[in-house]
Length: 624
Image (cartoon, rainbow, N blue to C red; front, side):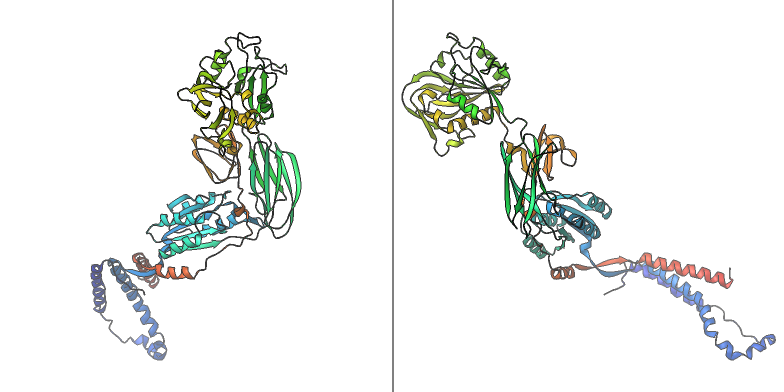
């Protein structure tokens, strides 16, 4: 209902001016009637004159009416009139949730779901606007800004390659609105793959009188995508799924430096998965599937390997052949050089080498300096310097180890020899000993050195009497390990776990990087030292990096591969769920409220028009 109250009722006293005007108009002298003989002929046509009397009176009174309405309008303005009208208060605050997940890149006739969502979102901005990007972690990109700024921000948003979390985005929108009236509009294909159920969240918001609109931008799509990638140091397995209802034939290619390394054709049954195994190329490579389809984000997957695949190891020994040498030669992670003292610069293959440029050095069954072909005096001084500068040394026990002057290198204080059988059991479970977690006593020995671990050293394995047999320690920048199992008195050297142990120990000592740390799924957040980061599409300076694009990232002087690898997000054929509008209409009815609209300006405009009309009327009549 429309009423006409006044904000300043005392201003109605100005209506006295209307009364004064009417009184003055009524008191003006009346014209006297006189008979003029020269005009007598007019009286003869009295009947004709009466036809125009009404119009003459109207024109005579028009000036009065114009002046009356002008004075009346000015008097009303003094009282500040306003009217109460109902309006939708939800238009005061608008929160736009824009789905920017990978599935929104799905195209139909060259137009993506995201393009459609963006177009629709630009139509609904009103009042104070907030914008949330719904990735796997919702991001607020705008909060409580005007329409112009909101449109500018919307034009700069691009789709990402992550999963979707609409539930948390809705809860975030609720926090932005707080107790303020407003509306939340979600633009999505409603392929929500993470977070709370959106229907449950919407019901919760509706119970709190929040208006939630779902705008469905899904389309018909066909897709075959890479859904899983198992990257290992030496081989990789790729999984490709056909999400269509008919069989498809695809070509899988492995590309490095823009050259196809290998490729294969496979036929994939409807809604089925096929896998393909290939050798992992060193550096950066890419898996591609063809032909392309409606979703590009899962048609390629990148692979990154650590800068260094193999660890260079120097084995110093006087043994012509040993199980340790065979184990190290068989290890894929090891690039082995074997030298026989006293010469350390020529390996057993007669190649010249630099002994202290290796990642790790193993001292195993050497002849003492006072023996034939013994170690050169001063060698352990050089090894000690190598360790202090960041090198890694493993010293293996041997019969005369206590007699060898190894400076301050060993991580244990050697004591008397103990000649009795004992089990060797794990004390600490880590990446070296995790293979022995189920059976902690992994071997036995009949002869070993009594020893005591030095301060700060860590015992990985010990004898029955707790004598440390495998001990790790650090010296300045380097690392030292003591291997106290005498291979000649133990069966450990013949076990399958023996080469695995040595490979793991060397990787641990060198600090070899796991290839899995270089390959990630989109949506992962990295906390790094603030630095420049090169993403697949741009360069930015940050200390917290959200990997939400498919491709290669570069930071910390390393390259990392990031891929979608999300079967749910790639299933763009699924029909979406949209909300019916009946509930919204009920909520809108509750949210329609009366608002005071001041009409002073409107009245002043009318007064101006009346006065302008009066001016032209007087001019036409000839009074001015």
